[in-house]
Amino acid sequence: MKEVWDKPRPKDLGKPKELTSAQKANAMRQARNAGRPYPNLVDNMNAAKGKK
Image (cartoon, rainbow, N blue to C red):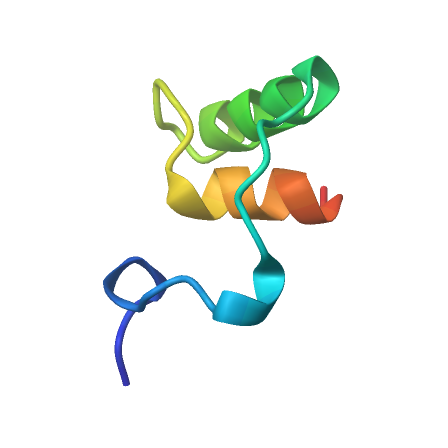
């Protein structure tokens, strides 16, 4: 099974959208809680979906 960053973006999702300021803050918070200095792809994806 491929990792999420190795898979192509599904065509049915449409074009990617920018994260809002609140979503960016949520991604940053998730990264810091995990001990990373900045968010990775998974943090950004979770923030875009509204997961905490």
